Image 1 (cartoon, rainbow, N blue to C red):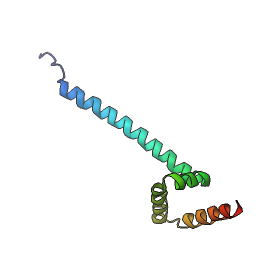
Image 2 (tube, rainbow, N blue to C red; image 1 turned 60 degrees about the vertical axis):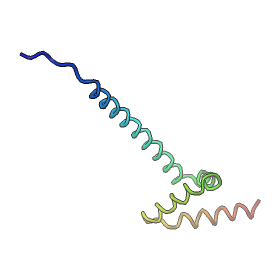
Image 3 (tube, rainbow, N blue to C red; image 1 turned 90 degrees about the vertical axis):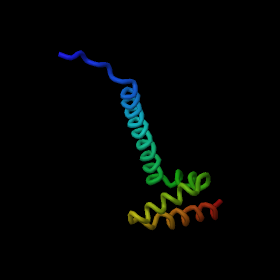
Length: 87
């Protein structure tokens, strides 16, 4: 019977890196879903994103138009213009 040889250091590094990458990817996915969910359900959050990060909101609207809900952009614009008029 042959004795077990220790695992090479490179294999341990690859295995550890894969685990770290998997955890990091899961955290990023959860965070992006949380932001998407909040943008999808909270108009005030979309307004905050519009004021501070307009390119992010533009991508959100484009994805929504591809998926099929093309009225969100117009509804938000009319709501925000009504808010500005009332101020």
